[in-house]
Each structure stands twice: as C-alpha cells, then as structure tokens.
Length: 254
Image (cartoon, rainbow, N blue to C red; front, side):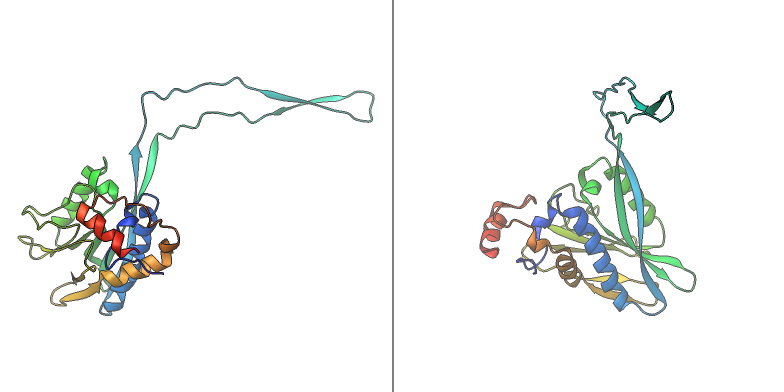
C-alpha cells in the first residue's frame, strides 16, 4: 500500500517510524541514484555512530549485597560434599550514552575512488538535538572542500538548515551546493501538498548532473517499510503542520 498523500507523508515524522524510514529512504535513494550514474561512478552508503550523553546527576548507583547460593550434593560415600555456586546479582543498569547512527550516501569516482558528492537526509537530532552542533561542524567541513553536497530535509519540525539567504516558506527543503560554485546553492522548497521534487545531483565536471526522483525513492521506501499497515491515520500527525494543512489532511486520508 502507498501513502495517501501526494508527496511526503507527515505521519512518518513520528519517532516510532522515522528511524526506520530514514534507513529505508536512504537505501532507496541510493538505488535510484545508482541507476542513473554513468559507469565511471558508484553510489555507496557510509555511516557514523555518535554517542549522545544522556547522563543525569540524579542517577545513583546502589551497591547490592553479594549473594551466594549454597547447594549440598549428596553422594554414596559416607561424607557429603558442600559446593558453593555464585548466583546472578541484579544490578541497576545505567545507560550514560545513547547511540545515534548517521547514514548518508557518497557518490565516488571509480578511477581514483574520490568522493564527488555527499547526499544527506536530515534526522531530528540534526535539527533540534544537542547533536546539531556536531552536524553543523560536519556540514562546514564538507562545504570547505571541492565536494558537491545535497541536503534533504523531510522534517517539518526543528530548526531549518537554511542557506544564509532566507528561503520561501515551505514544509520541506532540498539544498544542492556545488563544489565549484560555492557562492550560490540551488534550493528546492516544497509543501506537504506537493510531490517530492526531481533533484539534479551534480557529478565531477564535465560529466554534468544526474536527475534523481525523490518521489520514486519515497514510494519504494514506503512500500518496503510497510508503513501503511502501522500508521494510524485517524489521529493527527506528529509533524507540526499549519491548521490549514491539518484540515487538508483530513480530506486526503479519507
């Protein structure tokens, strides 16, 4: 089953679905991109694991007493042998750090294996969590190199990773920053009522661009993830949409 909406499904912004959708969409986008690449290029997934400190000063360690299980083993000999077996001890499990996995796409030039383009799908942690500063540092590092950068934001909530110049009001945004034209970037703003755009993903000059349908990748990811069987469309979405769009959603999902 497909999503009832023409473009991005705002119900996927729910934390119950987003981590899984992030992976499904990234893989589907990689496959869609790969089909359009010239033979001298390849598209691969890369990942990074970040540890988020979630420790609280209120956590207290409780040291339990050590318990020993005593078992007596009867034998046929006149004397019995007493054995001591260590018993399992129940301790409080404190998770001081939370693991957050970042996955992105790299387009590489086969002859020298160099990275030509990086494609990122933003996560909630990139937009409003403490990880935002870390992502911005990574973003700046990419933009300082002669590497193309495609950033896809399919989240309504959170602080926008916009270019310096203000973009038109929109729900979602795709930015394409070319490595050889850092003075400007291409922006694809769109709303929840519109289909996901076809994006020009730049390659190594003079090889031009590859046109990639985000809508195709989305529909593949949505079907593979079987989200239609899990999403409760009778309730409002997690995405903080406008009142007008929430009214529009009611009619679309009927």
